[in-house]
Image 1 (tube, rainbow, N blue to C red):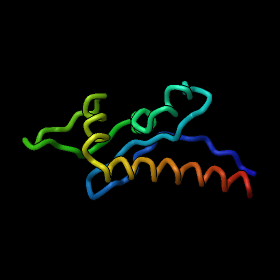
Image 2: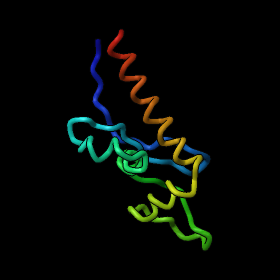
Image 3: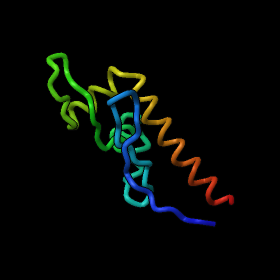
Image 4: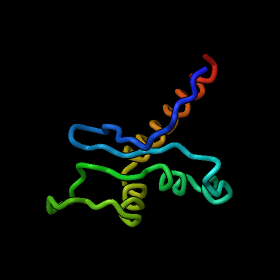
Length: 98
């Protein structure tokens, strides 16, 4: 059995757009707060992005307000973040079984 270190890394969403995603870290998270809300889980797991611009072709800056905006209005981004989180966890679970 090989135990891997988990690194926050960028995952390609589409050409030129990447999201930095981390899985839930149960030892460092207030689980009562995080597990109460899918939105809070999303905000915890999404650590950054590259390649997003606004309607004026300006950089769409990474901050809490913009993270909430993505959560509220971009279902595909929400689903992508949770898909990656689930893939990371499945990979870790698979490593333990081998």
